[in-house]
Structures are given as structure tokens and as C-alpha cells.
Image (tube, rainbow, N blue to C red; front, top):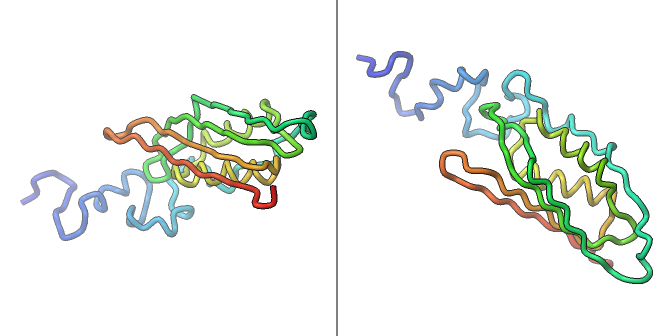
Length: 165
């Protein structure tokens, strides 16, 4: 006797029997092959082009250190499992070495994530890696605070320090 039509109760988690509703054909707990199993119309993280980032010379580099804080309160990406939008705030703190990031280019860079299926932890690590490769700062921290889904707020923070500076 089926209690809920279309749902079967076995030793497997119930979600495995409904995952096809999201266009997935895999166990949602196995993230190893995530990039192959994205729902339709969701872009992969490798479509993000860090080449849109531009840098400017930091004119006071020989006179003083500064700390720059950039706050993007309207960050969006997509859940790679469900395809639903994830909303959050990305805050970037860094001490420049010779260069600073040009803000318009950073805005266009971050907008690329809107159609990308990516986990929170991947988002902050990817942003940090891309920015560090262009800006080459003395130190940098990227923090993502993502709005509650199911009553859970998630904050992920990652940092970089140039050991030679």
C-alpha cells in the first residue's frame, strides 16, 4: 500500500525517489560527480571567466598600507542540486600590494555567478583564488553569508596571506 503516490519507502532516503523531479539522475549525497549532474539550464563553475577582472596600480604603495573592504550585499548563485537561487552577501577585505581591483570589473565578475550551480564553499574559494591571482595582495579574506534556507544561515570565510610580505 502506497501512503504517498509516487513515493516508495525502502532503506534508501526518500529523496532518492524524487530526485528525478529536479532533472538529476544520481544520489544527491554523492557530490563527487556534481558537475556532470547539474539540472538543465544551470551553468557549470568553469564557465566563470576571471578574465573580466581588471586591476589598477595602487598609487600609495610606497607610502602606506591600506585595508580595502568591498561589500556586495546582493550576491546570487544557484543551488547545484535543486537549481533554486541562493542569495547572499559577499564581503572582501584585502591589503593591496601593488594593485587594487577595479570595482566595475568586480561587479561584472560577480554577476557571472547568477546562472552557475555552485556550493557556498566553492563560491568563496573560487572568488578568493581568482582575485588573488589578479590583485596579488598582501592579504585577502572573502566571506560569504547566505540567507536562510530551511532555517539555516550559512557563513563561509576563507583567507589568503602572502608569506613573503
